[in-house]
Structure formats: C-alpha cells, structure tokens
Image (tube, rainbow, N blue to C red; front, side, top):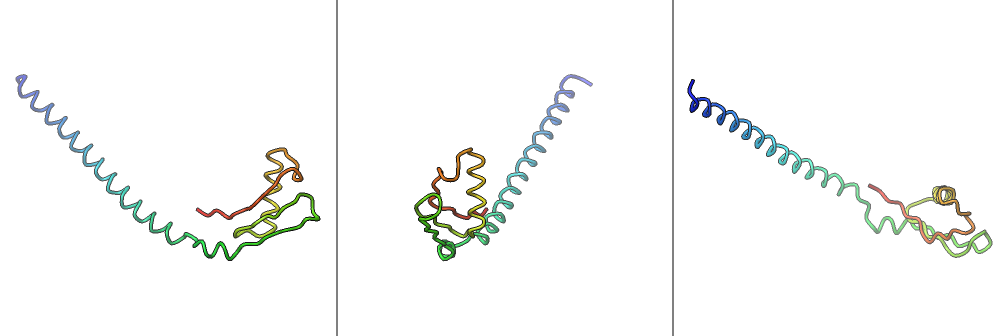
Length: 109
C-alpha cells in the first residue's frame, strides 16, 4: 500500500466520523426542540390564572396579636402561612415578633 492510498483511507475514516457526529448533533437539536415544544404546552395547561389567585385572597388584620399590620394570603390557608412564618423566623434566627410579613403567595411550577 502506498502513501496516497493510506491517506485516502484515513481521510475517508475521518470524514465518516465527522458526518456521524454531525448527524448525532442534528438529532439532539431536533429532539430538544420537540421536547421543549411539548414541555411548553404542558406548563401552559398547568398555569393558574391571576383571577383565580385573586379570588383566594385572605386578609388577616389583628391588632391584638403580637406584631401589627395586615397580612395578605394569596392561595394559601392560614395554617400553611403560620408554618411558613415559623420556618422563616427559625432559619433567620429573628423572633417572630420582630418580623413583618406583608403577603404570602402560593408559587406553582
């Protein structure tokens, strides 16, 4: 085998590898577009309209309890709000009487 035949074989091998890598890259791009299309349609179905969140608003206005002001709850019941407030107080090492919460809103993925 002479040098030109060896070069032809090696170049054709490199060409085959690059074509295969290009096809794999193209298939990954196409699959990611397809998956993102279905994922967007899935998240759009699970979104909660703003009107429904506004209907589930609870306002707590107790001047007699420790703390002051009013707390607006958006899509959260009072028990869950109390748990969130307790966790924030515990994690921040600030007493609940020193914290002021203006609103607690349910965030969905």
